[in-house]
Length: 444
Image 1 (cartoon, rainbow, N blue to C red):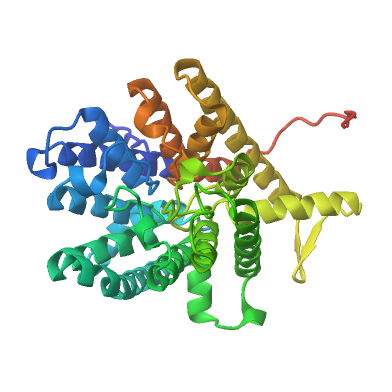
Image 2: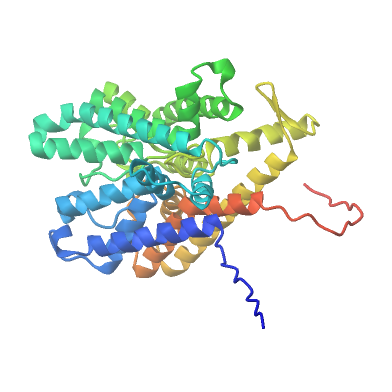
């Protein structure tokens, strides 16, 4: 008698779900590490540790305790490693470790890496990963070396070098974590700080795809459409936001008004560069005028580039939305830019991403207002900053209770890993078997 046993099918989790579980596991491990006695100078709550770990892994930068005084060097190292893991991408880091150990990278790992890097193809992923490592290490080490010129003379070799390395890693990963309670405000007019820190988070915010294109091609004519849109959009947003900030805050005594005129120019440039992605500041964000705060919320919502260390709906998403609006008024069925054409599917994707993001932010603001009394604009500012993983704060985060912290933590987590899940859903097509006659809906 011959018995035939059916082979059990091993269930496979979708790559985005695996990445979400990995990020969540990293946050849990980070929370446990930060709760260790040797990680802090005094006792902190589990809520403090969990919030800090979530903010670090999601490279946000919102804090409920002062990083420089509450955490020991060990605790600061843990925060820096969480920032590096979250910014570089956990799957990217894992594949790099496997490659260095000479271990094979299987097809499943490539699928996870493809989702983590937001790529449409699994080919050449290892080459892209190695290029990412080179760019990250080069930028962070050069940045730390330049920052050491400022920190070492003030704090000594040991402390100064550590401060330079920590802020170099935090800046490139657009995390916004600083070892000083006033962020970088004491160096508001320092040229090295005002050039090095923005250069790091601008390069980190452009995205690894753009970095790879620049690294290999080095010619504007041969750049991909994505690279051209990112570079053009980034320059336009930097120029516009710097001029707008200077005009609106020039006489505000709480921000630029009390500074020498040359320091006002440095501060305008720094805030314009940091707003979309990084979260560092050289002026008091809580003293911004309402129009400037609203402009900052818009810039944070736009965010950085795809496959970057920054958050937001992404610069290219914002550009495609604008181009789609222009195309509609010109009665064009397709979007034309830089000699290329974008179809309806691209517009549908950016609409889905923008709509989902707005709904999430509005829901979070509504829930926070239900349980936390405070200024509406400040709460909205904090929520948008959490979603865009920017980390700029008007001082609300430290006043939140555990329920409010939990809401902000969820928003930070979704802001970091949510686009991965949404991208997977948009890429999964199920053709409909049923067709319906066309209908008309009156709009506007």
